[in-house]
Length: 394
Image (cartoon, rainbow, N blue to C red):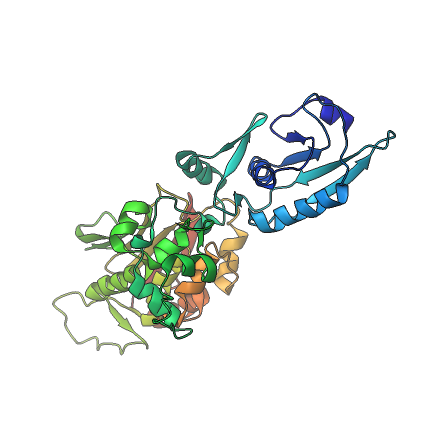
């Protein structure tokens, strides 16, 4: 402890003579947590002399409260009281980052640079998130978004599916509903910073195009069996997830037949002058589209999500981190054991009240029913931070 103190403050150590400003302490803990962890020591002055603290129990109580209530996601603190022969006591708080990125309750991100903490700029935050690739990217607040960016019709239709909203009492408050009821926005008092999940679920089309352009899905139809064939049609589908889901399914219907059961075989004597439309299992295709939208790794900016429709197959290609996912995880998902990358988005999207009415069963259902219809095994593979699912037609 003495050697640590004598070395002075650095990237992983902050010294305080006392706990007098909880807001700054919160920012300091967030900065340490976002910079690979470190230690806070209370009871040491700027000249590195140990003065001790007079109220260690109160400090410990406040530190526990800060880590539990003022930091998102909450931290589990490791706190020690160290007593010296002189009778002076210091408090040491060890910060171990487990669920980065961390932010303050009002939606601010901090990191340590040497012995200083700095608020992370929006540009730095975007670059940093690309590097750490957090599972909680859906909870990142969008600081330039407002209430006007949301489709109130979709949002309140979803809300009314659970309980009747009293219009007379003026409960149609988008900001308050997203902050307090849906936990999809942050900010204190009148501040309103909606999260990525709020925008992609309930945002207006033009707002999503402006604020989160990476959510686009490209759908293409080729007149052949691979991407080298002639391109027949290509479209970029933007908007909230409900709109994207409906538009993608509509595009697939334009070129394919979707059936619930195995189609009857044509007699060999029946002559066809054109290639028949490919046939797929209806619920498998809908579930594949839903899975693609829900399980996108939204942190990626340079890996587009796309759907390629060929003469005899449909290929779904999604951004998905390869590190830590293959090979065991890619095998496990065949049996319904998934790594839900956007749990909040998935929870809302799969609700009947949201309007998608998607089938249940996940990837195991897609594998089983598609093979039952076509007699061909579905291809699942991951490479170069992409997840690919290829379903063959009858």
